Image (cartoon, rainbow over all chains, first blue to last red):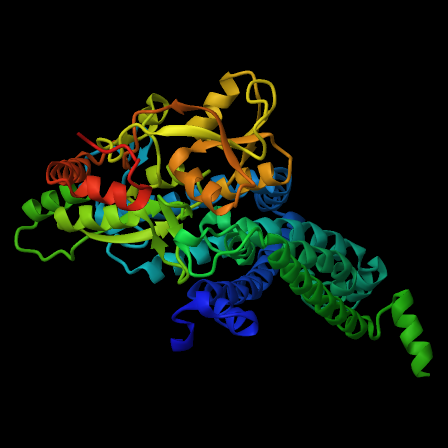
Length: 293
Length: 241
């Protein structure tokens, strides 16, 4: 903006208006979108991973059951931060290694040279000459996948418990009607398990909402990164808007954002719970029935 | 490595057109005047200008990326970017993991900054950034080391009284002390640490390192590197002879 050309001459609200619209601040505003997008992608993907893990863990085929139980145990057991630091790099290198085998069968040099990880140029992900936004989108997707795998393991444990919480009489009745195990699972167990799963899944969602600062470990710049960067002391040589340590104000803003998000989530979960309880053989379902009668 | 590969690929598949490679420059973006993010969120500072000039001289297309200081070396070796240009001093420990170009600043002074003259540098609490030569130096001395992930937090620790002093590159501290209006001051003697600041590259990237080395040499010879140092670090800064 033209009127922001000389911020030193501005005062009060005019200065603030210019300050809050610098490119750096726009990056902060965008990062709110990044965080929300990450949540929007990660939550359903994690649920999918969780459903797969829980189904596998319940399987009658031993190797599949081991796989499901192993996934749940390993991911739940490893500290998040170790998992994020190690896993993203390993995942990225794994992708590149597979592409390398596929695209460059004639390659002779070793992949590992000391500390370096070397694949041929065509196998790089993204390609070395790709524009910066491709790198960013790729980094974001790897981050989302990592989040989904980690939170998927917790969701798998919740769903595993929920599937077992469905009253056994329901399953037995289904069998008595001649339903196959597959039919029983999809028509009886799955529709009824959500009401048992929701409190656990709701908790997970809350933890996920607050876990996004881990994104910067993966090179994605999230709201906490920008708040720290913008709030830090700025000396006059390096900015048109020098100020002291303002991190408190930025973090206060984040606090409001996170509290708001939590409140909205709580309302959403409560509504969902009400819908899922309808017609269920639970205390909540019974209350609904009586209130309606 | 990239250029070596490009040439190798060209030799193998003669005539096949390859898109020109981009060299990705990794920096921290939180260490003015070396590197920082300007009001537009772009990488700026001494190393931005230096890096752009080096790329121009070596005829490379360069792109800037920021990364956390803590994971800046692992992300280089795993290939997320191709160079580290982030005020990183050349030390034997780092040289075991990655390769360095020749230095582009002379070995520079590290200094203590405290809120009062009487700060205890020998037995007190001294703040430094994690995985820096300054942190290593404090850990070896008698003072208690208090580590932080970013340079900003090390200075904030002195302001809040959490630490008695902060130990960092003097060039980083000078603008902060000047802007503090007497709240912060230099204390004790300056200390010479490290072998100057260089660009970090993967050990397998010999060709790229040689290109940057040649570009740094040419900037040293025609005096443009000294001009850049004086521009960003002031008249008293150490320059090349």
